[in-house]
Amino acid sequence: MSQVDLKGSLVALVTPMRSTGEVDDGALDALIDWHLESGTHGVVPVGTTGESATLNVREHLHVIEHTLRRVDGRVPVVAGTGANATAEAIDLTRDAKVVGADACLLVTPYYNKPTQEGLYQHYCAIAESVDIAMVLYNVPPRTACDMSAETVARLASVPQIVGIKEACGDADRVREIRALVPDDFIILSGEDAQTLTMFGFGAVGTISVTANVLPEMMSKFCESYLDGNIETAEELDEQLQPIHEILFCETSPIPTKWALNQMGRIPEGIRLPLVPLSEPHHAEMCKRLRAIGAL
Image (cartoon, rainbow, N blue to C red; front, top):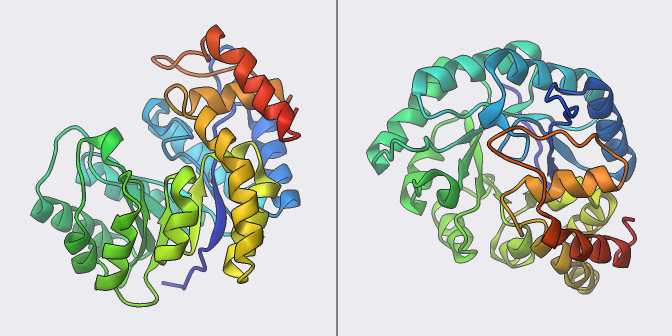
């Protein structure tokens, strides 16, 4: 297994869809090109923001492979391959490795609410089956399953498990994890509004929703902090906070896809049971996008 360098702004990429619901490969290419031009440090297809829950297996792997082909090795591609069935997660992770993913992002099993021991065995089983860098993903507001810092520390000793995207809602969890894991274990923010605080506690980057809309600004924010320009990072974070907030005014990725459509970046498609952003949020979204120069 080769080492993978994950730091800075990694975009939790939306999956562009036509109004009829099909994945739009042309729009996906254009989005990826924009990110590479804007300094995005990594691309994360078919995670939560990529609507992985409503893509079938064929589409899921198509988006991963298409993303890899377009990125062409210029930045790391971390493929979303998590599932609530361990066998399915193994299959998706194995397929992602075959098509060349640099790493895989594996959400905690959702709905079935495993114990901490179940989580440990789930990730160990995937690591034993597939030799690829794995990033854990803890997002209990979505999964009804919270992986403890102690379980993360146990898993950090597994060679394939190189890091975690932490999105439990409590930035202090990063401090708890950092105290228990090796120095080279990668901690990434999964909460845009908390990324600055998480940097202070030991995170080295973010898998960002906001990077979909403001890739260059998110890249500069992360680079500033990691280069030691804390004051610049704080100034950028203050400007970014209104966008972080509005992009979660409804279930993600509803606001982000609507914003990108208004920006002319993607078609209007989104899959049921998600629906387009409700009208009461339209004016405020446009106001904030204009204020920051995105519209």
